[in-house]
Image (cartoon, rainbow, N blue to C red; front, top):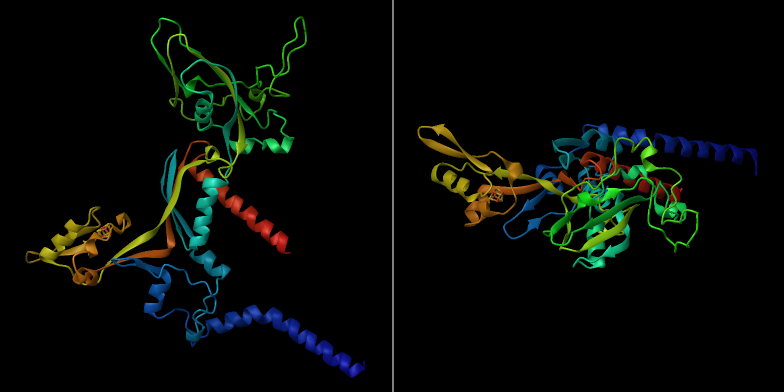
Length: 395
Ligand code: SF4
């Protein structure tokens, strides 16, 4: 190869390199030009950002993701991190010990649904997995009683425990919580109700021997767990004993002479394995409703519209000279029952029902293992881990 060819090749490489580096800024420059529209015409913007709820079915339910969808109009439809950062918002509307309602604005439905699914099936909790039944003379069968025990929410932070598989299924103080239940209804006494408050935490682990006790043996019999220390000596649990989250869950009823004696072992797991590990009673969302009056609705029609709505979305305002006008007072309450657009085409021309495609009203109801706001942050961390795993696999 000659020296001239060498020079022209290196020039080409430099141009390509600098071209790549400048790509972002060139695109930004083009997008900032006044002749390049940044917004769609109103009718297309409406179809892009809203679901239209018509009398028979919703329309335009899909999200338009393709970056070149509006290329013919000169509008860039690509997802840009800066825009996401600017538009994304979370507003907490209600927060109690058990549930949270918040608005998540500026997010794609696929991501909102990912959070919902992670909350239901992938945020871990502690739940009773093994029952060692020493005695059960009640009318409730062992299997049914065990199933009931499994569904009791345990008030223990799962982040303080490990999965049992990590320790090769050895049951130690870091992966197992042991409860004891021993209740007896004495003869000639009234029937008693056994509730979850009878489950007593054993911080030293199992007390039931896992093998036959040899007569005259002086050594302590082996039990079903091998704790190296008492759990209540750990700083996380001293002064904070572990117990079922709700103490009044009915487990069984005992008649005179009947008895239940068992040990219940709780371990860490996720709802995808079994619903008993799901940390939420419900996790759901709905898109923000938008109710728009397309025409003035006045006098008797205003009264009629107000009365049509079962949840009180509309109000009446006085416009003077004894006249009245309908207003949209509480659009968030709209359940999309469509009553207000029934009764003829004229009502469809008066009221438009829409849903905002990127605005989600999220409700999370915790079973009690973790506060609802913590559950959501845990779901965010799980999604983040998943994304990192994908990036690692691809790189
Ligand atoms: S759709 Fe139903 S709830 Fe919503 S505004 Fe109309 S009547 Fe009220």
